[in-house]
Image (cartoon, rainbow, N blue to C red):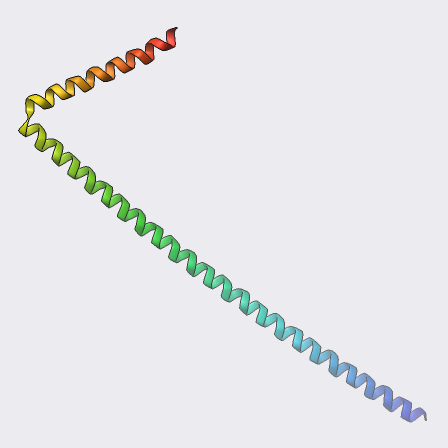
Length: 113
């Protein structure tokens, strides 16, 4: 009877050890898969951020280029108008200057009251 009990205990211990080893392996595999999943998500996020950053840079470049082109066109139009209508241009500049002086004196005058 002692031998049967000893054998049963040995078999139970062996089965328990086997179950613990299998559980450990399963847990290790699960952690490895989870780690791989997190790594893949990080890589995808980094790729998405890089793509968005590059798109933003391209949009900014395009906007700056469009603004520069518009400013050049406005400058060319202004130079053309001044060449074609020099008297009107000088009169308009004088009126604009007088208006700025009037606004500045009104603003400056309201501070002293």
